[in-house]
Length: 90
Image (cartoon, rainbow, N blue to C red):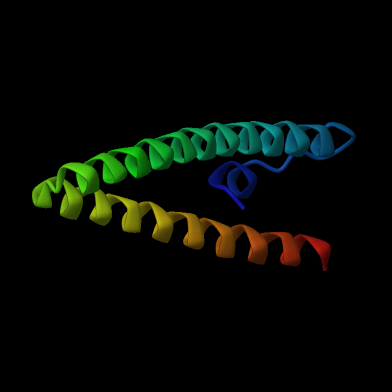
């Protein structure tokens, strides 16, 4: 849960609506960040292919490193979200 949920608990009929609005906002922002990350990842893959064609060793190592960072971020995000989904179903 976020700090907002911990610090503000609204009693009554608006509690679930407030929580729903917050979750919607978090999900929209996460979707935006994921979209930007996927776009950048695709750009990096294109840059990597160009670097391979031109045999630019510096560009190859730099883009390969950045691709590996993004792959790690995607794997971490997937594992975190999978755990969160499982905890919500309980």
